[in-house]
Length: 193
Image 1 (cartoon, rainbow, N blue to C red):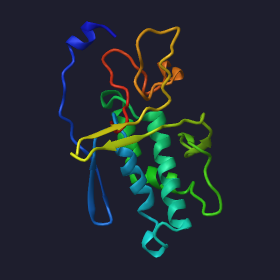
Image 2 (tube, rainbow, N blue to C red; image 1 turned 180 degrees about the vertical axis):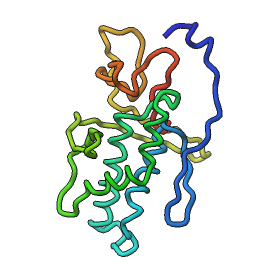
Image 3 (tube, helix red, strand yellow; image 1 turned 45 degrees about the vertical axis):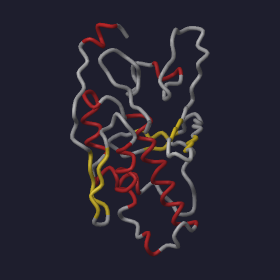
Image 4 (cartoon, rainbow, N blue to C red; image 1 turned 30 degrees about the vertical axis):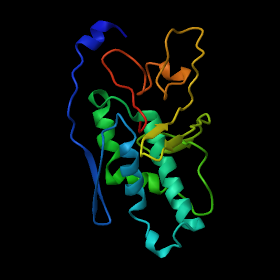
C-alpha cells in the first residue's frame, strides 16, 4: 500500500443492509463488517419457532449457534469490499440462500467448528476450516470510560513482512483469491471494532 493509494481514498456513506425479523426491521452495516452475519442468522432462524422452545434451553441454543456458524462461514469466505463483492452480498441475503443454509441444520448433530461452505449450483456443501480464536475484553471504570479490544489470530512477529496486519489477517489471507485480502484501493472486512 502506498501514499498514492491513500491519496485517492474517499469515504462514503453507504445504504444499510436490512431484513425484517418477527415484525422488527433490523439494520446493519455493509459486507465490510460483520453486521450482515446477524441478518443472515436471523433469516436462517426465521422459519424456526423459537418461542416454542425453552429460552436458552439446549434446542434453542443449538438453533441459534448453528445459524450463527453458517452465517459466519459466509462472512469468513465472502465478505469484503462492497465495491468488489456486491453481488455476493445480495445473494447471501436472499430467502433462497437462507433456506439452503437452514436445511444444513439438524437437531441430532452439530456442524463442524467454523464451517466453510462451498457454494455451487447443487447447493451448499460442508467442509472444514482451520480453528480460529478471538480474545475479547471490555473495561469500564467508575466514570463510564470504556475500552474494548478483540484481537483475532494476530501474529505481530512477521519475519517476511514489514509492519502489522489487520486483526482479521492471518498469513493465508494474503492470497489474492480471498475476499478479505489487503490490497490497494480495497477494504478488507473488519470486525465490530
